[in-house]
Length: 469
Image (tube, rainbow, N blue to C red):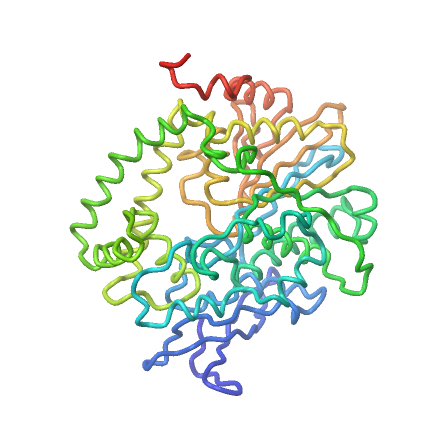
């Protein structure tokens, strides 16, 4: 879709044409750098949220596809395909929507760990793609963590490592606009479009892991849902964060589950050996791994090598010399094979995502007046929850893409009973054997019984290793 013949202002401006839901084309500008062959080298800036045309559906669809024009942009890595809806068709025999729980993976980010080689200037590019102080302050307008947490949000290594990029913020803004604004406010009338009223009436609560990119992803989604900048600027939601030992959105919360630590070690040691054998047959990847190990003075495993390469693919950046996009795809396949096998293990599944699943199940029918509960997490958060649900490797067969969404809907039925369903990136999941094949709707009592059968009632006891019971 990249239009190399179009030149606006300078050679650094490209045109990204995307299709709207009405199947009309919308033109969106984004900044790129080009190499000598006139091929896009990197998306240096994603769309500025400040320039989004308020209320323009075409702009929303274009926003979700910013930077996808690069020939290296992998649709397998990010869930922002503008032609794909995140919201499923509502069941036809329901009386009313009672509660929505929206969980998502954060938007595109910079690598968690930089590669040792920076001959192509990638590190400087990554730094330029992160959100500056002004953008960060603007995002906090709708919601923020408590002041005591602001300097404690987790980050690692270099200042730019593991940070939400402008492209990632644009993805999450588009997610918020589609799910919150267009579905829950405009089509359903489920939420108020007046953000001050939402805050005052307690319609929405937000939770995030204590990681900056997740907090900013939640803030971006809120900005997409309520994008009227003329309303009450004093209205702000508190974004709840937890100490890592209490954070159920992490598969291994604070490494407090001893049994899970043992299972991880047993599973990952042979898997790591297999990945090192794979690197032996790929000297160009082994060179990257060896450089990272020498620079960091620590072993660089499969994840550490794959992550910075996948981030380049997601942002349309050139890969290191000798590395092809097919190499990155193969590394991702290895990641899926390793993690899905372990997380789906009967002993591990209930521990990695069980606590979060129980929280969500109980929240579905809690007496709170909240209508929308937002959870901003990671790929591992979703994988762990899918494992607990028993759909990993079945209904869910691929690594969760950036900006992936899992929506739990609680419906009041016409006979007064409750039913629930889970919708992953627009597709209903079969939660139990009684889930309707047509739309995934499941009686709440059946879902609760399923959760009770899979999740330990005494998590502390389940986490003890057998020899210490």
